Image (cartoon, rainbow, N blue to C red; front, side, top):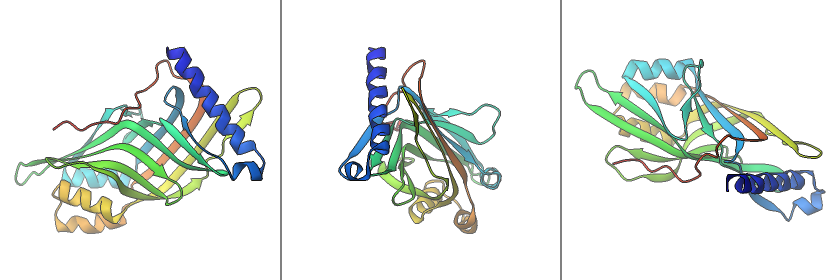
Length: 230
């Protein structure tokens, strides 16, 4: 079953590459969502040192959940496997890391109170230049597809195709700044003091590096949405 699933994933990805390589007239009529959870497709979110220092000051720690994992030897970096890529016309329109989550925990040293915000099922909207996630403040209902970060494309994602089947792609997103919605999620959910407003408004939270290759994972990652535990 795993081999069959992987075979379909590779065929879908090859079709995506064919769309990119097709004549302009043909591309205009095509769009496709390509499953990549059986392939080595990953997005690494690396929080900036400024962001990590700010987390330390207010007592925030991070924990990867679901498909997400810590990147070894790179402090503040988390791997979020890419589960699908959306192609629209001649460009990448979006991508998702469904099943991955980052849990932000805060301990208020003054009161001893613990608070939590969980961001899960990340997606990238390249048209709007937003990073979205299902946001859950402790004890509250999830708000799906909340815009968390604005971003800048430092390096556009270009799929490179070589016969018979070698497809790779790499992209770097930088200048990750909180959206208004993202700021509200962190400030309310983690009960941050008003003095944190300036930090939330001006901190560049780091980079996201996306790598895509048609190489099979030893085991496909789950593409089921991550559900926050009560």
